[in-house]
Length: 462
Image (cartoon, rainbow, N blue to C red; front, side, top):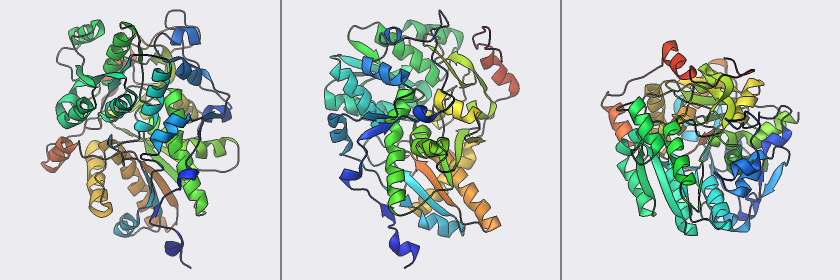
């Protein structure tokens, strides 16, 4: 029997096959990610210092790098069942279009109202806030997927939700903003005049279209200045990668079910949530010496933290109110161009992924946005899904790798994460179709300005 007859076009897991535990890849890392530091003392952040900003249980998850599995609470699993398990899809039409011997699979996370994978962590973080008896949460959002997801989770659990949305995305994506408001969230363009740090950023960078680092600063200030509120983050932190491991766990279960083993695993990389979630169980096998895979992180050429950044301790936010994280960074003061992959406009990378990259367990490439949108349209025309600009970075490199297989005749299996849909990104698609989109690659001088703000202390030299 041929493979096409044995393996469905779309692989759906049964409800009983959905993970009941999150996987913590840090438990299998020989070199653990460097600890978060208190910027005042330069000592590892304690749970008591963290819980003034984050929910207590999330603090425990953030600091735990030895427990391999965390049980998913039943209420979160019940919420997951509304849209999970998500399908693993064989891209037969794309393969045929490319005339490649490669087999291409993608894990599709866009089958929910938020249109992305972000809901996996949003419901978890909202659940722990509610369980702690809090009134509400504050957050930032870039492209809007995280803000939408959190507003949905908060509506479900009857929590107040305050979102600081990067200004260029706020202006480019009014319908994404209105979805958040429909779910009850208060949405503010960032940087704004509503916070002290926002006013300071506007004074230093007049006319700025903002960044995730700016929005984080404002959201943190809003959280600590209101009783009964905590700050939640949609990417970067280890707790977020933990929650997003449901993506990789489902993917691996589906592939194991049909005897499929990927050779190459590709994900777009901004802060690291979807990439970390997709690769976690596969990376665990590699770390334990049980299997080998090639992992590729894809980032925008306009914000190339892995490919052109420095691996040092840096602030997680532009306002320098957050802890220091050791990560590949462009400097917390780096202001990326207002490119259309709003979810990838972060100056740093997850400490977990940064450590894995520095240890040589994965690769990274940067791509220009016109090439990304070209790949996005090619995918949409043959696979029937309009992809988000962020996801399209992974599509671009998946196509590149498939074409290499065409040149060499190798029958490799390629897996990538399709993290969301692009139906709220039509301004970007319009600009691409009108020939108005341009590519921006920061110069070394541009990067030097951002990196000049990296905190200087012994052992943290650039």
